Length: 139
Image (cartoon, rainbow, N blue to C red; front, side, top):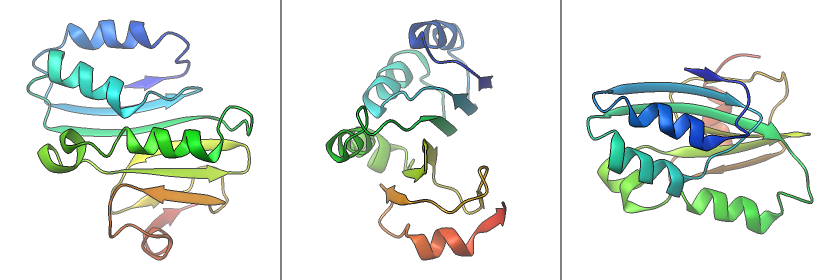
């Protein structure tokens, strides 16, 4: 599923609430981020059969909106036992100039904006910049 504008996340959640048998979700979202607490709520309550969840969410990076503390808060929302222990879904945050991107960790990495990240954070303990660079498939 590709969503270009996340101005109204309630519409996305409303759609997903009508798909309780969904087992796999690949999601690409531009112009908005949804935190781990919101995703956990929708998955627990409406997507009980979801086994695979891969996503990329990105928005324009505004230093006034995304302070270091806000980025840490956002990443911490994906560090609960729901994400780490129950599902083993890990998330990385990449900031490249004016774009902040959240994505589920995978073995391959596509660098869509043609530049390596200025900032890198991950909820997966073995995920680091060296691993990321070794797994770039295209730029």
